[in-house]
Length: 381
Image (cartoon, rainbow, N blue to C red; front, side, top):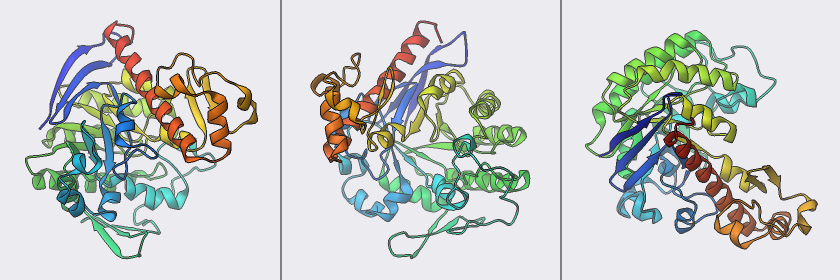
């Protein structure tokens, strides 16, 4: 099981320092959770991830169910042994795939509409169904991208899969709604999510720990109702999921509605959000953990995150720059390699370039959050 201790509460905001104790070690919070969808951080070995100051990873139950199958992972001794990762692990429930492979794919939108300009209105109404999957009260019928066979995932199936994978923390199965939902559709989806949350609690074995997911789209009454329901359902922690409105300010409003309704003695995880400019803002709202693909996704496209902004290593200007990516960074990449060499690898589309930039970006993110923890400790945040 897990144990969460609050070490310090800010007097300036809702920010807090905590220690999340799991069977595989303690996570200092606030903490960044790199995404390891298929039991790996793309381009890195688990030993290399350890060099990035990463404390905890999150894998994905839906994708691991498809490949290689939870039975294979369980037979290997669980996710930790399977991927040779000694530290804490989470598994996402598959709820995000209800959105990303469903309405999100159909409409070309993300969880915050601002990042997808040109979309407006409320196109997801009662009775709407995504093109590529079917949402029912019992669960969601997907189609395997590998052979087209039906794949059904409901709350009991998600818990069974996550329990077999054997991470330290799993999440309740939920419907992650798109930001173009009507109030009526969001109400229906929330009622379904709450039934699924209760079913997950009822089906849960003694281990792993279970976090319940708060939904409700951009609607204040729904978010507050969801936070109160999930707070009372009997989970060890909370996930804040779903679409987060049309702007960063809308996201702040949603967190402001939700946080006061959640038991402060339990950890809160913001699912799938973590742009650098957002991190202090969400921590000030009381978020303890958050996952994001930005560092790894950027690295595979030749983008390095630095204290002076983002560098596009694909540009020719860096080929004659023999300085580190970031002079203030202590990561293994900045200690050994230059912008020139990394630009060469990026422009040559070498996998080694993606690997080195991923290592740097994840280290940079973890260092950024580490400094936020220091700010909270010093009473500056």
